[in-house]
Length: 408
Image (cartoon, rainbow, N blue to C red; front, side, top):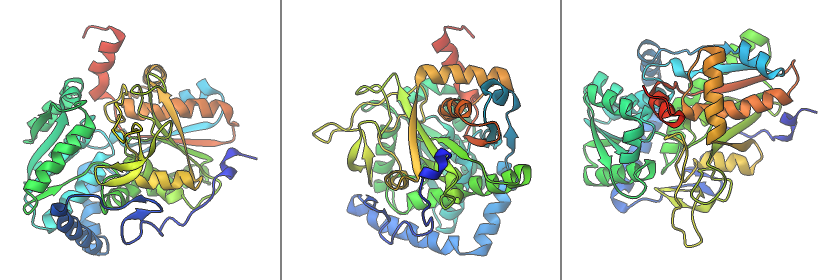
């Protein structure tokens, strides 16, 4: 019996509840100053999601500006290399700005415009959400400020320049570990201070309600396309689907349309970093505990006193200490399984995909490739595996060259 049969189907439309909870996860844990803003945002989104005109405008921009639909690509040489399941790649790397992040940025920018907000703030780790936010703000004439940890700014210098080129102000964050968690802290401080005229385009399926639901919904287009494309190509659904998981936006959008399909195995891949030792990884389900971080109850890497632990990943987009609440819920229900990939494995898969397929994947997406290549070797030749290639690796080339000791 295929491993897929061990995962239970769920009612994908039953969550979150009215308080933004996915079982024990999610909710709203913010200063009182932001409660009104979140309630306003939730009400505005509820109207927009049921407004055919809003949805039509969003579809228009996703096609004309972002470049949807993206291809479902048969990775013939990777398939031959593994000698097992047929490997398909969902090519979100082909989108404008280089990753899936543009789906959510467009949706939230349209929502901000409907709400009369003329200033937008965002956080970014790998820079892809920041670039997407800068692009949509330029398109719609919105003021844009992006917060980014100083460490991430150094390793993603290309994306910093891209944001500034499109008119965004990029503010470096020197506090703490100088990565994504600290960037979110500064963005939330800004929002508290400027809440009346500012919308915060949060970049992943985490934070307080309605963000996990809203970000998920804007990325559902990924899974809808996969379903249509794989049925057209193969006449059936895949046996397994794999995506990288930081906060979890690309993964939940990729998985959502398949949650009720018990025979489709869903696997999220976290950052194993240098290994599963305290401070050396960002695999929340490998030593994480239930807690609250930046507005959300979920699995968090924290010590016995509740202090957030240091994290590490070769990829700037996966080193966040918490995981999106919907992922935690589906893990409890045995609907989404989780694995991790370590830095050295990621580097090898990065080079392999580049050389065999002529596709340079983002380091974040390469985590999914690592596990996908392992699984393909274990699966039968008549089985189908789909990996979400959530972003392209142009942004990572300098960082990879530095790790490999190559002078550019």
